[in-house]
Image (tube, rainbow, N blue to C red; front, side, top):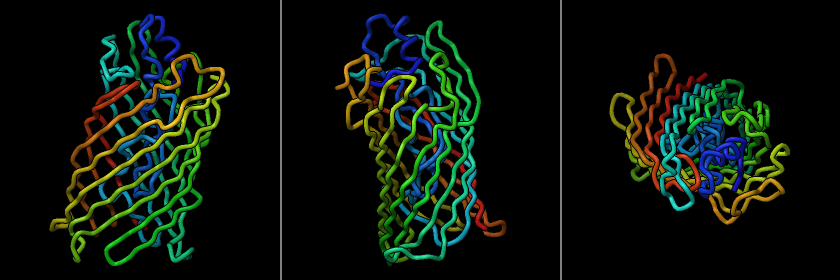
Length: 323
């Protein structure tokens, strides 16, 4: 598995426990993504993970829909707390582990009037700032700084009477600082290419009931400081929502994220066959204020089924301004 500086340090505390890469996932980026299915994106929201950039759960209600042509500015606020460190079998390591992470990110989305293969063409940019407070036995670290910037130069959205489809390609830049001796570093230390696909079905003609899914694949490059290339990560997000009166929408959202391939490189010091995974589910509510052209969405998800990573609670608050 991927071992970040935190994992290397934790071995002193955990002895021979096979907790490797337990830090992986967590989040990253986060902020972002959130958006529309748009998938994908943002900000490193997570903890000391050294694996992927995309934080599962970023997208909630209607996560597989691309908005119509126009400009949209979204302000993401992501909060993560965990006090369980799951091993490769899902058991709790039982160390004095605690992590709190806060990510605030600004994302601007531009869906143009241009068409490609019948789809609306767009692009977006997300700039995240990450605060991480981490404790593992005698190890403590706290850092705040610019995270890894996310650019999606290609966004395609198809809109049919009852179906919506989406595709996007994006890339995470290693703009955030990454240090081997600082497990709470705001950057991941490598580039990541992301492919996303979204499918949405409106269960009724009025489109008050909607089921949406978004799938993302992360292809990572080498972290040269660790001499390690994380394996491919897969994320699936889903939501079932109902539009109510007074521009209110409620729903249930969930996700699953799993590493598909082994980590590679001279820096791999644990069993490469151990792949991290996590599941999450929770409620969401959104309100649109037409007078100020703003949408406010809030969501909280409890994680379960974690392996080789932290497991806890994450919550999101996103404000979107339509221009």
